[in-house]
Length: 146
Image 1: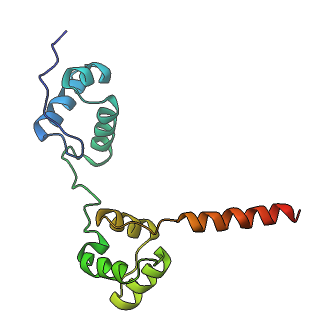
Image 2: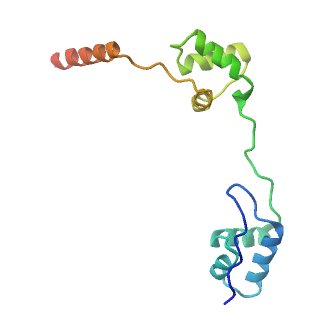
Image 3: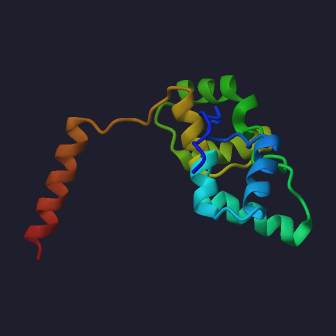
């Protein structure tokens, strides 16, 4: 058996080199099983199967452009968002979304806004002890009414 090649230096999120793609497909076309080729070239069997299927369907063997490299919607508003949260520290995510839509004409999901606030180091208002006590008293009252 042929010894596995040295570490390719591939990192997550990057495409395999065209040279490696061609060698993997040539090896499989030459009669080596997908699992042996995967071990030899240090790629996954799934990658080999997908590369063969794509070549069969479209004739392509080159890497396609990576998707989802979009600029974050709120990446141009960090100062405005920080200023709004500083001015209204008790603002909710829904209120902040409405403000962004009204003031800046931009819409975003709650999750996108949450992630933006996290990247900016801004946190939601913490529930204080007095608020927790009020919640406990309300719960006790509701239970006693049953």
